Image (tube, rainbow, N blue to C red; front, side, top):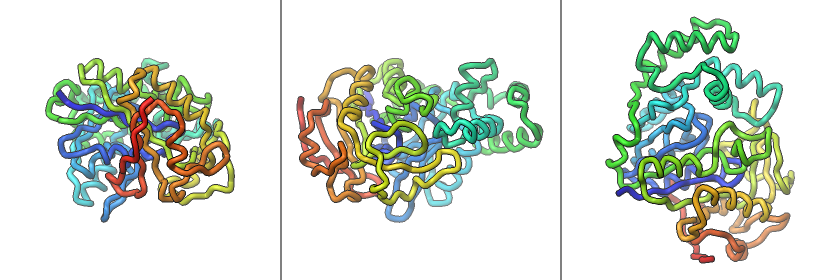
Length: 366
């Protein structure tokens, strides 16, 4: 039976989930995306190539295959463009998609961007929120399996365009269909392929404190960013209980508006991926708060249980801080921070942006 792991960001995204997923991956792994969708931006580097993973799992460089679950949005255009970039750089990514994955159309993109210019909730503006809202609040659903039957697909696209009062509809549908045809998707339930893999890694998107149920509304995502979806899949597929890797930076970050404790302009660590964004806004930095860290871990224990032996904490970007942790408006040494009572059994740190560069620091049993 396959080994399983879950990788979850603890706060507001950008914690280092891509690096952690890459560390865990091998050619015998399947990376399952279980939240968010093509809005993710998980950066992984090798000695020759740096890539931001959005529509593929962050274990791709290490030979892992990707599975897109029914909890994720999927954009054919984003998938095609990312696959082309990977292939051009010498990779042959393998990707499967659940029949009920939610499909993002050009009309969702446009609607999402119009709303974000007004609301400024912190959306990346690629249609994830609009896609999920359309699926949960209207009858105008579009699933991966619908892409296989053109008459139904055309009818649904016309209905979605009408729902949004879109313009230039025929042109946008034509472009969308071109990308669908180029994708050549492997649409299959997870049940049919799971036994091919020794390790199934559930890669989360964004962070626990952006969860639509537990975050600071309205600056949340329309997705469950806790381990909830991963645990649902694990139970449904009769997989073994996972090791859970919670990821945080050595300092706190947030992209866009919303609550953030201990924010300060004094911190300006370089970030090659996260820049000021036309929809998300400014990339912010600050000090962690111990109470928020504890709260995020407690939230996720609702779904993962209280077995501390399976839980790990990954701290990234310590190379930037000189092994200091910025927390509670002060700088503490890494080893002093590791004395904090936390419901985890192991600690890992990352001192390099390169894939697989995590090292175990110590054990802590509570």
